[in-house]
Length: 163
Image 1 (cartoon, helix red, strand yellow):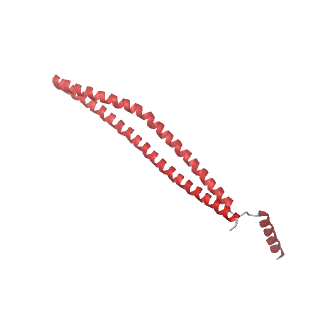
Image 2: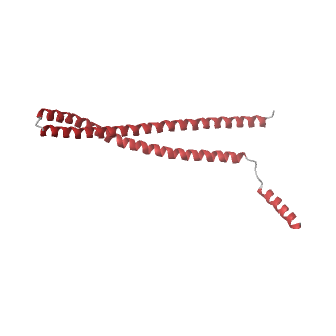
């Protein structure tokens, strides 16, 4: 075995190792993006649950106000006071939920925006990787001598013309 063969095998081995590492990196990137997508989905779901809880609390507050008004119409001040006390505690809960929602909403929006940008960059990277693979395949193709092909075509045309 001569030195050229050894160098050729070494280069092929290094290229194979590089391709395996690259495919491992691509799989790792896909896994990371899938995990990030799940995190974004969980954040959005949390935001939706918080908003739903806030709306439900607002509905309870309205119901408590109506019950207090009915109790006053029935001249039951003790019951009206009880409903208003419960309304007050529910209002404090609603305020806290509103604050949490106000803090969470811009964060979730930013997270969705950043993830969307990440997906766009990932698509760009995938396109670049595909382009690099295509260039590598083209480089491995045997050289095509278009001048020789043109000469052969001219030769065939002249034969056809003679017939």
